[in-house]
Image (cartoon, rainbow, N blue to C red; front, side, top):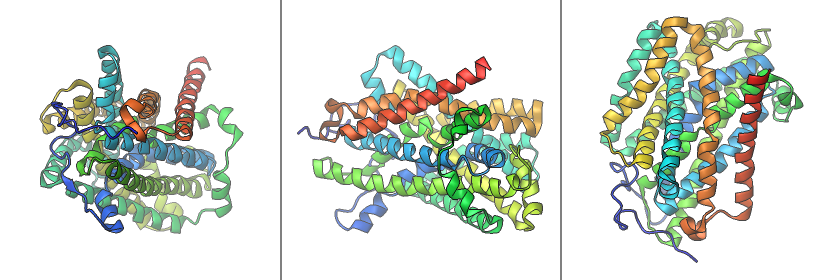
Length: 442
């Protein structure tokens, strides 16, 4: 059997992924729970991208228009996410390269540049949703004008730099606290909304209407794009390298197992939060005949009157603010990973993160200035569709590279995993192509 490849540093490589935190977290030699705690973190950092404001827009639109019927899409998207993020983590652990670096090593310069541009577009689309979501939350909670709220999000990069300077564990703890706050807020919302259990169970079954209703397909692919994010695949393959593991066959196998548990728990928690948002929208807005509740602000203003609980809207806005801030932490990290991995260009972390944020702030300012809150709602959902359209360009290289025995050795994908990964990749590509046909030919 082939053993795991040696360290990039040992091979004389000039860079490693996220060098300022590379192998910065010690892993204990014994104890299941101690090891699980040490490995826990990357999955949750990735999972925050699965519950960002873009998810809110698509989940609220889906629940208000189609009740519980799109829960099936959320479930499928979550299963695909677990599979693909597990492959991304495995690549980082075994090859000690993130996905961007692996693509740079495998493909021509021209192909690498194209993949980099597409990855940057995906990151900008994701960050756009986070900027808008945070600005909306600041407006709802503190009555800060949307335009000023968008500008204030530029200072998020300072918080990221401070936390990372204190140690990567501080960053992970802050993320976990914010995730817990979102989960608690939505637990209360669901208890108050009292959704129909039969409707929820029925929504977990597929509906043929998905392929006949253009609006349902559009929202579904938006949900897919909001759930399985292309830049998360690059990021996860980098984050797992923050653990100082032993690079023997047994050490790598142990790291793969614990990272899978971390990923499974984190992404399933993200699924529950996404499902809670959609269920809340179905139980509240759809039930009361508000079938086109695509704007987060309108959802905020109508939630308390519909449920008869004054705190409902406050919890909604608080969870939204936590969601936007959480996703900011990982979106800017992904920008650093992608640029360094594809181009071998090392910018100062503050500069790279500021560039990432500016790519989102500029279009957000333009849309808010021209169209106000109505424009932000459309932009949120469009950003998620853009994310979904970028997915194949990250997924296909991931499936190919993790199936290459020269790179992965004994940890290459099994025939069953290869089959499932290709099915997931092709499903994403086919749904995207079908959506484009509907958009341009009807």
